[in-house]
Image (cartoon, rainbow, N blue to C red; front, side, top):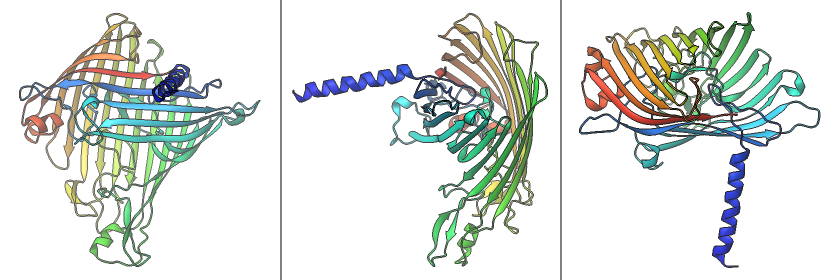
Length: 484
C-alpha cells in the first residue's frame, strides 16, 4: 500500500478517535471548574476560556489596556481581561463491585499571554508571548465506601467560590501542592510552598546551602496547615471557620560565608490565620440569590494577599531586618458578595472588598527586604462594584457595571478610579441566568482617575498613554465554560 494511503487511513482513524473522545466527554463547573463524576464514563473534560480583540483609540488606534488601578488585578472589574484558556481532563476509575467510592485523577492545563497580545498572534517564543502552566494534577477518592471520608494528594486549585465580576477567589484559596482529608463538613489539608523564583524577596524560598563546603542555592519550603469547618445554622444560613498555621523552614547553612549568605540564610519564621465566613441564601428572591460575608486576619509570614490574589502565603511587606523575621506583620481582609435574582428579567451582582496589610518593618512607608530591595510596608485598598444584568430576551442580555476602587501605598496619597462599563451580549444557549455561557460581548468602558492616580500613572492604561483624567477601552470578547 502506498505511504500516502497508509497515512490517510491512520490519520482518519486518529481523527475518529479524537471525535469519539469529545462526544463521550462530560462537563461540569461551579465557581472554579469542578467535575461531575460519572461511573459509566472513563474520561470527562471541562474548559474555561476567554478570547477576543480590544482597542483604545490611542495613537491612532492601539491595543486596549486594563483600566483598573495598579496592583489590584481584576478587582475593579474583569471585562478588560486578556485571552486565557483552561482545559481540564478528568480520568475516572471504577472501584470494585459494591464499593461506592468515586475515584478520579484531574489535570488542568492553562495557557495565557504574558503581554497584551492575543493568542492568534503570539507564540511561546514571542516577546510577551504565551505561557503554559499545569496548575492542577491530583488524585482524589471521594466518599470512600460511603463513609463520607474523602482523600486527595497532588497539586490542586483548592479554593471556594469567587467574586466572579472581580475574578477574586477570597477567604480560603489554599491552592498548591499538598494533600488533604475531608469528612462531611470538615476539611484538613497541608500545602507545601517552594519556588525556584530567585527574584522572590518577601521572604525568599531559597537559601545558600554550604554544608558541603561549597555554597549552592537550595530551596526553602513553607508548610501551611489548614483546617476548615462548616456549620449549617438553618436552611438559609451557614458559617465556615478557618484556621491556618504557616512555618518557613530554617536555612541549612552552617558557615556564614559573607554578608550575602546572611541575607539568604535568615532563620525560620511562622504565621497564623483566623477567618469566618457567613453564607445566607435569600429565599424571598429567585433561586440562586445569596449574600456572603467573610472576615480574615493573618499575622506574621501569613499576611499575604495582594494584586487581586488572596493566598495568605504571599507574604506582604518588609521584614524586621534586626530581628530577621515578620513578627508583627498582619493583614485584615473583609469581603461581601451578593447575587440577587429579582426576576427573569433582572439580576444584580454586587461586591465590596477591603484589605489592610502591613509588614514587620518599623515604618508605614518604604522599607528594605532581606536583599535590600525597597518595598511598601503598608497598603490599604477598598473596592465596591455592581453589575446589572438585564435579560432583554432569551438570547440578548445587557450588562452595565460600575466600580469604584481606591488604594494607598505607604504614606502616599490615595489613588482612585471610578469605572463605567456597558456590554451588550448575545447568549447562544438562550438561558436567562447570570451564569449562562458562552457569551459574545461588545465591551465599552470608561474610567475617571483622581489627581494622584493620573499624575503617578497608576494604571496599565495610564502607563501606556501618559497622564490622563479619563481612560477608555473597547473590545469584542467571547467567554465560555462547559459542564454537565
